[in-house]
Image (spheres, rainbow, N blue to C red):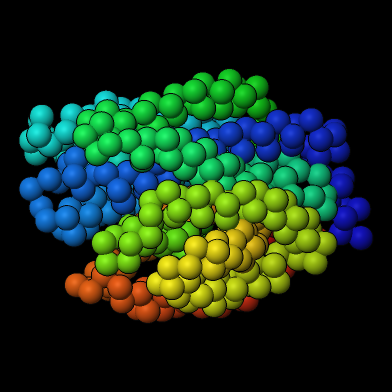
Length: 440
């Protein structure tokens, strides 16, 4: 019955051409966003402490560098309010063009920054400014892509098509890590002078491709119907807070699962390659690539499963798996046994984290009505992601002077996973709900 009603909703009935374009555009945008995200993460963990904070001790330089990584997450909630407002007022497409341009421009300019030795304190200041611009742009990227793709998707396949937004994150990670692998093994003098800049400059290619594809997008029919009927919210954020505060809080808490991602990608790299642990940079970068290659395969499969059995069981199952496997992953790192590190990473990221990552674009978007969907997703995720952004810095402090005390970090991730799973358990199951009845 539900599927029949949903199939009659505007948009999807015309075929899959629109949703395919939307999925490709979302994939490319997320690839760019997370290419930028991960090259910055890799540079923050391995290079920026020496380039922008050379007067500090190595440990303090790394801490300051990781703090600049987290700065973007302060800007993201503010960007989410602004971009969410206009995404729900003027349309998803325009904001998606704006976010991809802003993200790519900021990333390219980071590659052009002078070092501390050249410009003094101005260098880290400019780094923070551009990092904030990255954060503002990222605040609306996945929310816009998820909203637009969901609203184009046919009945019974919403999770599958929206999952390509997050599959782009894995593609971005893989491309970023491969590019960084080429420069990470340069002699330190070349790496610290010009080598680290190359991955940032390469983002320009993806920007052009994503922009061209996104210009061909159309607004979803369900959104255009609200425009024609003059049902667009005048102040979407205000309406969101008045009508769906519980759903907004639920998305915030569910988004804590992202702590697992940043601890794995940023803190884990710095921790494992530090002098106290001593795993090689190449090994850890390749481990991350392998885990994300597996995720590329698993995420569409988990999304298909979520279209058949529901969002909640797939999301919650994966989150619980992450909370358990994070302990195994750090234990594997401390063992120094390379095959064990690979296996733990493959299960943690390639399998467990892939489940919520595949499902959340549909799961979160379906919590909200069309008129506040962009705002609800953007604000909820970006407030939740703020904890993830500072998780590497928090984790570095939790480790303490020993630089091998990983247990408090694993507990931090496990607590975040427990909160995420608990919030998801309270959510409505929406995989059979017609798109015009979501959020009501």
